[in-house]
Amino acid sequence: MMSSTSGSLYPSAYRPSLAVETPQIFTASPGRHSKTRLKGSGQRFLSRTHNIATSISPSGWVAACSPKRVRLYNVKNANQAEDIPLCVELTIPLQKVEKIRGVALTENLLAVITHMQLLVYEEYSGGTPNLVKAQRIDQDEFWIPRSVSISQNGLPLKDKIATASVLVGGEGQSGVKLFRYQYIQCWNVENHSTILSCPRNTGAIKIVGFSPRRSNARYGPMAFALSTGNHLYCWNVDQNSRPGWTTRLDPSWHVDCNSSSRERAFHDEITNATFVICPKGRPHILCTVDHKPGSHLPLTFIVPVDLEHDPQTIRQQISPISDSVIGQSVLAGTASCNGRFLVVLEKGHDGYNMKLLAFRGAPMGRLTCSATGASSWPVKLRVINTLATTISISIEEQNAALEIIAIDGQGHVACSRISVPEMLKDQSPSPPIHEMPIELPVLD
Figure 1 (tube, rainbow, N blue to C red):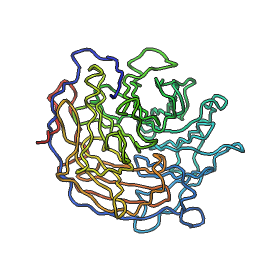
Figure 2: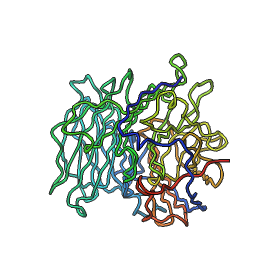
Figure 3: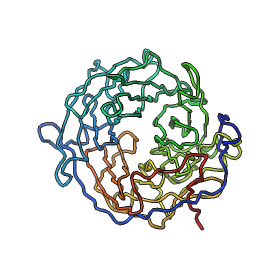
């Protein structure tokens, strides 16, 4: 059986209901699609041998890195009918045996991990980025960085004050480290970091990430991680909820996604994980799965992050998405910030397809998708392996439209614009908790 641990952080008055959510469904119309690719230095096409990790910023910049260099591209504002020109090439200072392992972007910051270091750069879109801080984090090679994610709150030029957080996934029960940065006239790192503990983790942390920035998120800002053993962890990382500085933080929620301790899933079968906050503010985690014959792991599934109900209740709430909706081989996926749409990359018999679906409510407070209103289109992406670092997908909400960018590990880029007439960018995704909630519709 799936095992879980959770702790109550909020009073009973705020306990989430298990009722079905039933909001308006926004209809996505057929969109415009284009394919392009990234150029390397000297106008060469960026070959697959250069890409070990990719990332897409909220503003449409793309980072693609080789073992020694990071290349940056302004995909959103480029002519997507032509190859995307290289804007910035950054050589990372490395020791002889050191290589880049991951990269992540926000609106203003670039985070890079190597076998030993975390390096954060600022203002990458204005030319050669400035180094904010490089720090050794590998504990003399006893803790090796494996994954990275970055989140930014506020824009320096607009808000004058901004903050950022960086998660680095590593190994073992001290599996994740959290670093914080603040902008007041310039970016600076806080002098301390926090270890986010991963109970029963004996492998590596392959994916780390943050919850979307939503004012009505039920539990506030959260961080999450996925281990190579298919364990999911969540932590409440709201500094306002805890006085003072914490050197170590236990998970608020933990689930073993394997069907039982004796029936282990295949290594790296969960290809990606992403945090979803539905319009009402309930948090969920979507896990895309490249399902293998004979596996005991569910197909691509959604599990609610529920800090209030007992472990038996949580065990019952893993919700696989039907293979009539999403195929068995799903290589990546992400959700819109407003919690209404999901986009995934599927591997089919004739190549790869992107698929856009609307989230819908399900009994017991769960979330799912249906084939009704789904859009699917072929893409010229090439996936050599399913490492989460090599495939990146972003989905941006605009007035009455969604902008989707996807990049593979070889520099191929797929761009789409999907019309959603009922969706306005300035709509509040959901009201505050004390007001009448918007709810997701239940399937028949």
